[in-house]
Amino acid sequence: MDNGASSYRRFLDGDDEGIVEIIRDYKDGLILYLNGYVNNIFVAEELMEETFVKIVTKKPKFTEKYAFKTWLYTIGRNVVMDYLRHHKRMADTPIDDLEHCLVEEESVERSCLREEQKIALHRALRKLREDYRQVLYLTYFDGFSNADAAVAMNKSRRQIENLVYRAKQALKTQLEKENFVYEEL
Amino acid sequence: MKSYREIADSVFARREQYVIAQRKKKQLVTRVTASVGSVALVSLAGIALLRSDAFRETPPISDGGATTTTTHIPTEGEDTTTTTVNTTVPAPTTDGGVVAPTTTATTVPTTAPSKTEPPKTTATTTAPTKLLITGDEPDDYGADCFGDESPKFRYGEISPLLKEAMEKNKDANAIYAVLVAVCPRFDQASAMDEMNKAVEEFKATDEMVQLAEQEKWGEYHNRVTNFKVEYGINLANLEVDALAKLSETELFDLVADAYSKPSDEVSPIVLTLHMYSYRASYFYSAVLSADAINELAERGTYMFWLDSPDTINDVYNDSGYNVDE
Image (cartoon, rainbow over all chains, first blue to last red; front, side):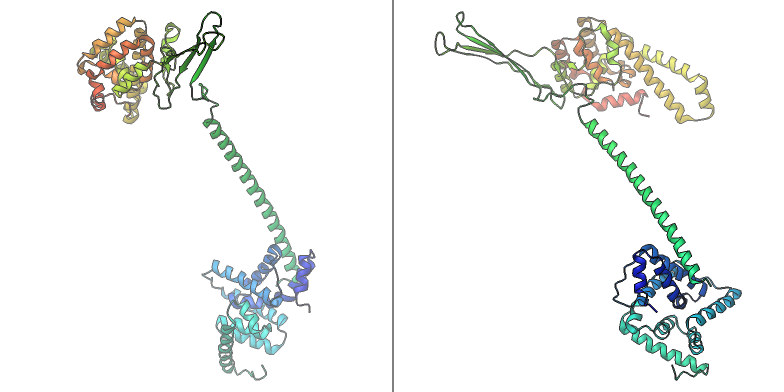
């Protein structure tokens, strides 16, 4: 799979198909990442689309200092922060929608994570704190290095290391409660 | 969940909307900027035009107003002197003052009795009796009042002696008050009777009765006051017309007589009209000689309203004709 940078360059050169490829390759991961912030898969999907709208209209510069995915997720995080700033008082999701939400989320999980073990792990993440959830998602599921995760989450590398350590401890406790076998992870 | 194609289509559709919105915004900004720019340019041009000399009736005198005419009269074979006549007319000053004309006369003897340059005589004569003053053109009907029947009157001219008198009295308005006060019709009783009668008739009009019934007293009193002022102006206008027909001697006698009048014999209408002072100045300069004006000015200290503006205001307010209401 192309890392996305070349597709983005093609898009900047006038080939819209470049952005289509990026959407195809990164949309699910981005949705799950954004879902860690908003905890609503539908809103996360809207924010994912909004992220791509930002990219095609503003055409921000990509310097290749970081991985393309890191750059994309950073934009996504900015979008979600704007969203949260304007929706400080999050409306409670109705029960019916919540069920629908979970079904939808499972669908994305299957599409993105594929492996059953990873899916179970991802679900365990839901019960963690927001920042633990985000950092573990980035490092476990999206393969981000601590440095990339620090950029995407707008934190220092040291903060990310501490956060990863505490998040792992929390996840371990959570998995033990659920009798989950985690040695292989 | 949308497919990536659907998402891409949606993203591109929103991009189109964004581009259109940006284009409209740009057009709007351009249009507003152009409008504001045009208005600013027109305003600046207007201001520049107003501040220029384009609308002034009297063109500025570039050399400061001083006009020098030199005439060389050769007298070779007949006369051993050359006469050069310099006539200098001082320029009007910007503060309304008038510079006194200067007169010099010199005779320069020649160094040789003949063929060489003859002796010169330089004589500077006094300017004509009337000098220009600066100041705003009166916005009343003064000029129309005199019309063509007053050949002496010329707008913008004033005797330097009258100017001096006005400065001495410190209140040009008072001079006009004198002018109106001396008119025979403007004695206290007849003027007041005449005005009161007219005011009562005015109050009886349907419009005023209606205002009174509606208890719109602010507007009611404003209209009554305006009526009084207008009435007073009309009366004064008639009187000035009458005064314009008097001879200089008759006018002088009337004005001089007014100096001796006690203040309570002066009509309040005189005070109501105090703002039309410029016309009085022109009238004086047109009718009275400089000497007569000067003499009147010297006596001006006896006039009660020339002593103190406060006195004028007191009498004015007591009369009930406060036009500023």
